[in-house]
Length: 379
Ligand SMILES: NC(=O)c1ccc[n+]([C@@H]2O[C@H](COP(=O)([O-])OP(=O)(O)OC[C@H]3O[C@@H](n4cnc5c(N)ncnc54)[C@H](O)[C@@H]3O)[C@@H](O)[C@H]2O)c1
Image (tube, rainbow, N blue to C red; front, side, top):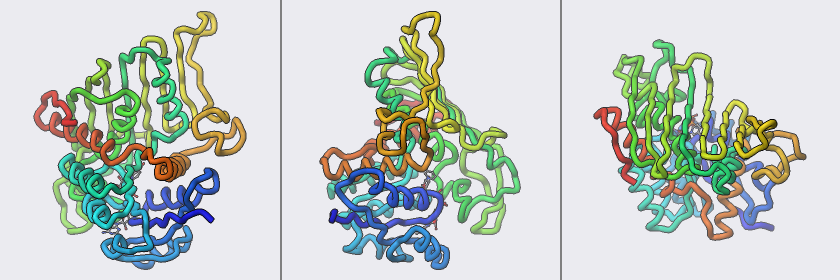
């Protein structure tokens, strides 16, 4: 019998489902040193929580996260709540000696993020942030190719994350499902929600950013607030674009919006190096596009690598070569890496400290947009 690792999940929405599925699958597809146990699901609304707990097989439910983090039979606290609750829950859970898996962005801002890092480092609890795109096999393969020097010196990095779901002025802000439009719950708009993913991937693949120059826009200035019933000013950014310089000398541009009609979750990046380029697209997430100038001229061209072979990252754990996997598997990979990190003593990344670097860039972007100046992230 493997030693159990008891999970207490806070929040049962989109990420609550994605993570529950990952905990259910990880031991089936990976040979892990601990058995993940869905111990407690926690949220305030009793009935939907009960239905969630039954569907996913949680042993029990709880309505108060403060009582949950004190329970002796819970080892890991998984924070799947809106952003404004991440810091308070994580700092309290660290004081109780719990391991913490926190959804992204780490915090509402860098100052809050620093307090979270101090809390987990002071008590030495294992910690990780769910920047799951690192563990899409095609993205992990991109990291491998870059680290092997296949691209040579990197000149350009460009990333986009485009959606179109907030174009209607009738859409209210605040409350269940729409907390992303409420600055009090979200901290920022597309910057912290979508660009945070692009930045985490970029720092991981291409190193730290030296400076950023950003612009943001809030297209719909007022929306009804679901919690107050009144029409209130919208405090989030609806769109953000920024130019940046990496410390390795490469130039970058990033763009994110929820007003790109026709795009639902189009996260793309392209990296151009001296010898080769790579490109990836979330809508076709199991493929990596690769161009190598060193190929023989007459057959040189972009190749579309179907990242499904047994020697591709993570793929040996799934089906047979040629059969692709999807979005949800990135979370399963993250759970597996976290558990393996506990056993090996080499923590899975991104830790809170790693995610604080992304938070510093988010702060710099918002500061640059407000002041119309280049800003260096405070790493
Ligand atoms: N990694 C990713 O790709 C990804 C994708 C989506 C969301 N997220 C992040 O995950 C987090 C949650 O987003 P979501 O889309 O799952 O939101 P959601 O609105 O679907 O779910 C939020 C959950 O938090 C619960 N909650 C709110 N206040 C609570 C409280 N005081 N105590 C206990 N539970 C409470 C709600 O009941 C709900 O179940 C956010 O930080 C978001 O940025 C990450």
